[in-house]
Image (cartoon, rainbow, N blue to C red; front, side, top):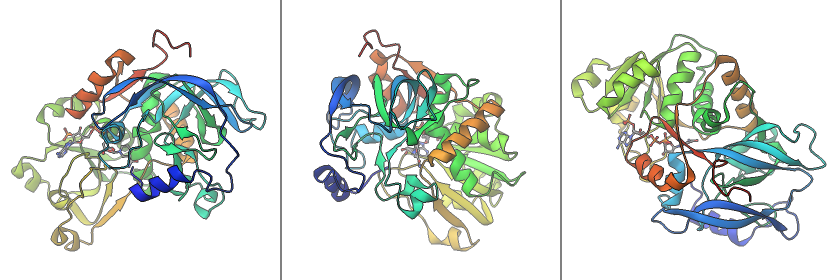
Length: 380
Ligand code: NAP
């Protein structure tokens, strides 16, 4: 999710660019985090200060944080815009421990989640129409600068001070560890599918490319929305889990030309979650006429788009990034009703680098979740 280096530099050097900007940051709250300090991406314990709880803020004791491939991209500076030290993590669940005087919708002890957006201008058309995730002045929950000039540090940390307008309720029926990646992986596919009308329609033939943290949630939402769901994967060993554990209807091994040809023009919709360099050519061949491919994966290198399979079939390529707070809350309630949860492996903070390495090697079923509150010295 990169900003261009020049935009990022502007954000860092001119923190008070918004009409919402406050005066000097009051960084009074000590937190323990796990930070990368250079492009090796290695995470080490890091003590830092967060801002004082303001009138619009809540302070959250973080319980769990999902480990998205996005965190690896940022920690290793894949997109060339990382401002070190960086505390990654934007799939956050925790408990409210302090509430500002302007906050009426959240109470101490409440189960909450925080996602990628920490702040936005709240004044532009996008913010007013619940699309603040596309606001030009959107401030991510890490690798950015908050309105008050303080750096944003993410959820691989014991505590977070968050503006209540970007915090959602987690339904009681959802366990906090398995709910954490809903804030990112779940939301990403939920909104991309919704914006391509897969929420309203039923019985479409859809597929997900890449069975990782984001991809496995596309199967769950696809089935809950009433579609026929196929996984397109480079990993033959994932077929059994895709069908038997996650409920996929079909599995195509993308490295097997015969399987790809057999499924030519069979799909209405494809969601691409691939994190590495690839061409859309073979996948465009799988779409029916007027089919849609929605890109949510964000490889560091450009995605190749050959014109022929695109134009012979009026196919549509679109992109989507996370979702709005309104959409997160709506998705959380939908998950609560339909018992949709992420398949996770919980890791302790002393195994954080091992988890990062395994994620880079495609060795996770299907999302690592960091047990932040389980940290021995998480008194901070
Ligand atoms: P992940 O768990 O590592 O999954 C990515 C999957 O991509 C892998 O499991 C693998 O699936 C497939 N893959 C990897 N290398 C490939 C290659 N060379 N060719 C084809 N397929 C390959 O990562 P994730 O956490 O799901 O994130 C996926 C991407 O989405 C990342 O780039 C991340 O930054 C991005 N993301 C975007 C948003 C958004 O809002 N748009 C939100 C979250 C994440 P198979 O083994 O099945 O092939």
